[in-house]
Image 1 (cartoon, protein in one colour):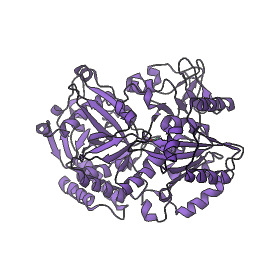
Image 2 (tube, rainbow, N blue to C red; image 1 turned 90 degrees about the vertical axis):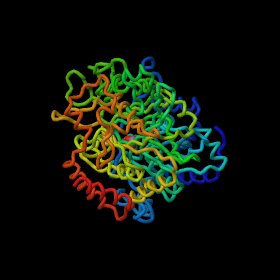
Image 3 (cartoon, protein in one colour; image 1 turned 45 degrees about the horizontal axis):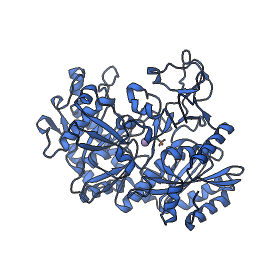
Image 4 (cartoon, rainbow, N blue to C red; image 1 turned 60 degrees about the vertical axis):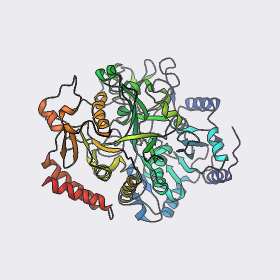
Length: 593
Ligand code: SAT
Ligand code: MN
């Protein structure tokens, strides 16, 4: 390991050591030998299970406490000096009070344990977009997961030694005590404290905590955007590459969209998809007035259930080596893993262990084998569709921004906003049915603007204003769209086939980004924006009953009057919102009359 000479780093690590009282300290240099030794330790202590080395080389199984299987939004806090800076959508605690509440929990929390110090970079090390964090943790799972999800070790220390600034991330699983679990962000101090959890989203502090909550705060201060977005590249048969960034709430198919496989006729025609990111985008305005995006992560923390060779073969292939599986079902016959949905490829084990660790028989068990929010943590480099641009860390120019939620009835398949401000309005009104990615009821509609409700680190009214201001600074901003893959018919079945067929919808969106647009004449203008006619969409080989197709390509005014009423209530939460949004809401209401 190279020597750490950054005094700020050394002082902070010492300070943490003094109140955490670990038995020893291990700096993570990221070397193969060091990580192998840590993996061996995890196996020896039973914290992780090494899986079948032929079928799943370098793969490990990990299980959390049954009460600790998802992000915990109630226990996620933005701790600032003034409440107005956290705004009405965050749990706010005065920052001194939050430190005082958590300090006693951290006091001696690492007694008898090793304190790991993980220097990591979000974004390719040293690239223009990159930012550094240091995570202190007592969890081997965190060390090994951070190694997959971020760039860690010596190259990052070298940056720190050059004087690079860093985010102070402190985690202890402590007693994994649900009653005393806190995930607290102190954006004024570039600090994150997380205690009493051992589940990914609460403890891999580079991800939602840094890359989104602290990132969004920094983005506002420094003039860029940190967003809950996948990034993908669509290469047309003529070789031209276009880039799309898309925001969906957790567990709404971001990973699937990012890795989509074109339907046969489009593949035969020469369309190719490359993946740049599946969850988080950092976006900056380039010298040419366009918006450029990078994926600051280095791996995928994807939902396992539902992943199979039909739904997302790229994701499945990504997880075949050097992957950590969390809370899935174990197959004891061949020491592999299994989850609901995988029966398309591999039958459920008769000799398994469910996500609680209880004996489980896929033929007779009524309970699930894998937790609905069970996850794989897999290196991006494994992904068959990974884009070369991913590795350079240079931003890619975004043509289209796509917002989407899970709405059974209201939102059409796709709708293009009228301009940037209207697009921000479209993002601000996003709502979705909740999923298992966070604790709480599943299937309840909630407003989730830009899919950032749980991840915006500051006042959301200010966040919308920042979006509007960013638009003003761009001479060539992306076009903004809203999509909904989740409309259902009378029988409750999805109308749109989704998955690879979503490319058809993206291609229409991209055609609208051409100057001049190649699709205008087959578009209907509605109060919500532009919706393609069915002639405008490529529906080759797709069979959807006429009336159902019409229903997802029109705007139901009655339903939308109710939506507007709900939206007004939502906006009422805010003590301030940009005038542009109030005006767009007013225009929508008028147009629906
Ligand atoms: O749990 S995570 O926040 O890391 C994943 C998600 O909810 O999107
Ligand atoms: Mn996410």
